[in-house]
Image (tube, rainbow, N blue to C red; front, side):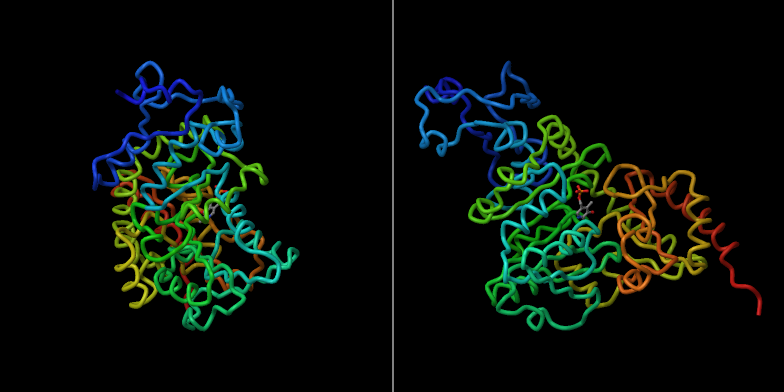
Length: 416
Ligand SMILES: *Cc1c(COP(=O)(O)O)cnc(C)c1O
């Protein structure tokens, strides 16, 4: 008897029964087939969009029935949202996943669910500007925040204390693309009873799976690579059932993912592995092609900061991604000419879309930082972030070389 024919299907809105995939199915297969449900109407092979905010109570409504998994109200659960959540859960290798209206929704929900007054958060390395702003609010709630500057060479064991409840970092980090050792931070945190939260936005689960390396929770701005087309805002949290039950903030923070956006996200996820493979290829090709250009002082790309980071990246990453930083010798003046001279690459913030973007962190993601803070983050006045898309590498290299040539003419040092 198929699931559709079973008496259980007669009770309204059973929670998802995803069709199991063959044991050992690869990531691309999981992206394409990971959220198939036998209960889509009319034999549809792509998911319907469930706009309904409310759902019929089971005939014999009881607390037990609710706990047994029925839909009630779309802020709490919605079938359209569970599809992409299931795919992301499988790719990250977690027990449970929840989606949010934005990456910041996911990060705020996670941090506020896990840390309380009198406890400490350790914030490691360069973080997304919104996350830094959130951490700036925490002291008001009695939560201490200890910041570990990018490039701090002290051992993780020396940076956590018995009060540390949460260690959070991004790897590769924003915007310097520094690599942090997920395994090493996880053992240090676990030794003092703290949790590790990794923002895996830049790497994506195709390039890196932090849970397998010891992290407790993974967050994503699904707005970036998971969404992939710069046309949706979404966030995700993945981890154990136990922790996800605590990160249950859709109920109180009110940032659930909209069902239509969830549909778009699920559609995008199907091509994630293909897109990320191309982003990786373009990242490596462009780094090699522009690193020696006379206008370029330095290219920042995961693993390039030191031999130690290269070793960590080789261990924990399967690909290095499509974001790189470029420090121009000519400073702010060279940056202005460089950006004006790009013809293919658009000048805009954000990353992870199919189209390449160039941005200046000092005036976008890190606009609230003052010059000293920017310097501490390694953002010199000549710093530009390139978020490479999936275009043909030769076209990107041509556009960048022409813009760098123009920047070099302006930025050339005056003769002695
Ligand atoms: C964009 C971004 C965020 C915030 O995500 P939104 O979807 O914009 O809320 C968080 N972390 C990183 C690394 C990001 O790039």
